[in-house]
Length: 190
Image (cartoon, rainbow, N blue to C red; front, side, top):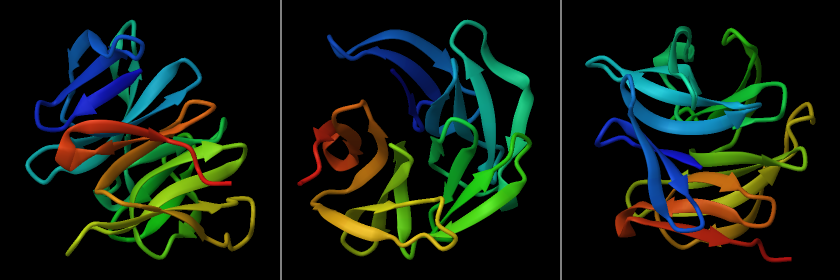
């Protein structure tokens, strides 16, 4: 598993059995999010003094690509998910998820109706952490079907802490409890 540290501008390969760092690499900016895409990773990276956002390809064997760099629409974006064909990029304050083609053109827009702190594909559906950061970190996990013309966003559970990022390992969801510097796994209620 690879993860990033925005404060240290580094990414890390983690042994999830022993929870230890296997490898560490410098990122070309602030790593905000990552997603696995058929043997490589894509990172949302904040670059320059204005933290302009780009999607950068990362190959664990060769590092970050200098040529495969996509500017995020309006230079904003944070979390990434992947449906096997397309990247999906969330824009936290615009409360939307964008479906992108291979060069960053917007193919679709999904309005989520709240700030977005992570999303992941599971069985063709998008699970999204949505809510409000201010004033008191109020978050829910919701589910939507991106194949619908206007996806209906359904809240399915309350997340009782300040969650950041979301992934799924085939059995459990994982998120970061930033205030406690902890990674949390959970299953959804039936």
